[in-house]
Length: 83
Image (cartoon, rainbow, N blue to C red; front, side, top):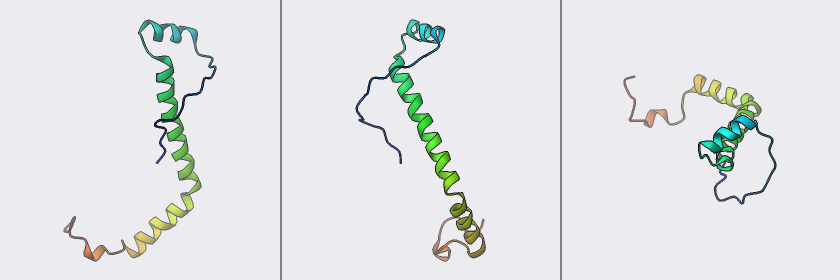
């Protein structure tokens, strides 16, 4: 799992829409914290999107095998019986 907790902060320069920035400040928003949180979410989203693309063949092969052969140890499952 991607975790970004307790990572040090690094100063950076951003170019933001002036009207949006003014409104954010007027609303008392912490722009740095907001951008950091939104960027972290987007990084996670793109990371997993890329991971799924790179592993698509293996995922498909695994799903095909499970469809053909069933789940390993399925005969020992006690939940979801009768479905």
